[in-house]
Amino acid sequence: MTALTLSTAAAPGLRADAIVIGVAKGAGGPSVAPGAEAVDKAYDGRLAGVLETLGASGAEGEVTKLPAPAGFKAPVVVAVGLGAEPEKDAGFDAEALRRAAGAAARALAGAKKAAFALPLTEAADAGVVAEGVLLGAYSFDAYKESAKDAKGAKGKGNGKAPLAEAALLGGKPRDKAYKAAVERAAAVAEELNRARDLVNTPPNDLNPEAFAAVAQAAAKEHGIKVQVLDEKALVKGGYGGILGVGAGSASGPRLVKLSYTSPKAKKSLAFVGKGITYDSGGISLKPAGHNETMKCDMAGAAAVFAAVVAAARLGLEVNVTGWLALAENMPSGSATRPGDVLRMYSGKTVEVLNTDAEGRLVLADALWAASQEKPDAIIDVATLTGAMMLALGSRTYGIMANDDAFRSAVHEAAEESGEPAWPMPLPEHLRKGMDSPTADIANMGERMGGGLVAGLFLREFVGEGITWAHLDIAGPAFNEGGPFGYTPKGGTGTAVRTLVRVAERVALGDLG
Image (cartoon, rainbow, N blue to C red):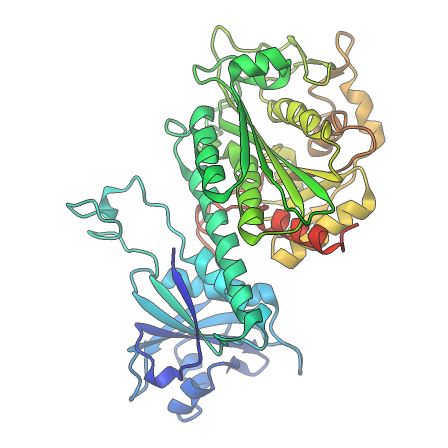
């Protein structure tokens, strides 16, 4: 991962491959953002004009490279757009700084060191810039020979290694708040990038057993208790949902429980993640064109795993338990069929009308298991429905809950973290569509509002009196388009930062 340092050095004398500055989009053209005064002075105060001549406008994510002025030890200045110029006396939005830092870090792949002279007016700014750098510098090239030399060294040959080091100019190395902000950013970003790695790993290398092994190794490293239920344990425990989804695969399902405890904790949280390591749709096979990215159907479990590890690394004063419901949904002679009835861990029976509505089945068992421990709140995370993508697009996830205040609090945590999300309802009239003449409930209901129907199904398996929220991350969990800001192509790590922020707020006592 990119090394981070806080530096009080002046930009002209710093040895680096590039100096990164911010440019805002003003009414009269681009303007140089605070933090780059020394750079602008070296251009005789004409840097904004030079950038405009080169076609720069200051638009968000725009990257412009130009030769550094005489006397600078760095050969290149990289100007990155921050978007609209803020109102007078107002600072730049945290997400604008985060995205700008990410875009610059990505543009500097192959560089050994870059100095970031972006606006840092307080410790929090250093944290978001650090986070943007670490997330933007991410790359997944484990399977690319072009990223290795003859000795197998990463980043050689035709590939470019991520930016090796970033110095944050204007930072205060001896200030505890600045140091803490950067250390938090490093812990969260490193775990979020681990979630991205999991999502990007091909399904032939990441089946439920392999995912469980990754979780066990991380738990051992960070002092987290771990319990893995294999097929025999799931059968003995009566986990009919997880077993039913995994019945068609040669790779058996798993339920992984990760428990981080703090001696100072007064509250407890449970995070539940959908972990379908590959989703073919089962007997209700997905049509052509819909299978190619289904390795990402475990992104919810990856987010939960990363968030629990991050909470442990940060030493948050809250107990956090993560439940990873892992299975591979495949068609075979032993697969669950449409029309089958599964007896869930809760004892309820579910008529399976569509085997491609499998995520809610594994989550149902994990939600009930989490409920038995009576946490103060449960949040589940899942790439659950295409309907949510139709409703909110590919960059925003939906939030549903059985408590309006909690839904609002989770939404606030998402906004604070820079993760686009939107509160969604759970209309009671849609519940009737899941009535089954054969079982207690069917796994499908009305077609319209399918994302809300899925949320209503999950609510049936949350213990009585427990506050719960459901995050449907089907849209933003996997980016099929080009990279933007600090978001790469492929796995994004969506929801990790929201979960960590919720845990932080609960630990501080300001989330109920």
